[in-house]
Image (cartoon, rainbow, N blue to C red):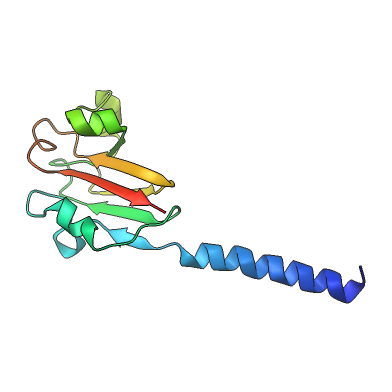
Length: 124
């Protein structure tokens, strides 16, 4: 392979990596209403397309709510595996990168998930 060919291969690889990085999107959960009781999160996510590597940003009232990434069973039961996990994201903003497939999030404050503060998104 000549020097020019090696440069073209390196340039092509760089462009491929950059396009993958640029294509990741940031989604603010609940848009301007944020993460709370006033949004139907099934409706909010219904019209959106999510991809692996995208970021979800949860904005909520600090000390009142939280955002916790959970398993499918925790999502269904609205139970967080431990108090430490629930307390980890009480600052008022939480960011999570999506993995390919189903991603589950709840508010770990007792009663909040059951009142609708839960979100399931599937990333392509």
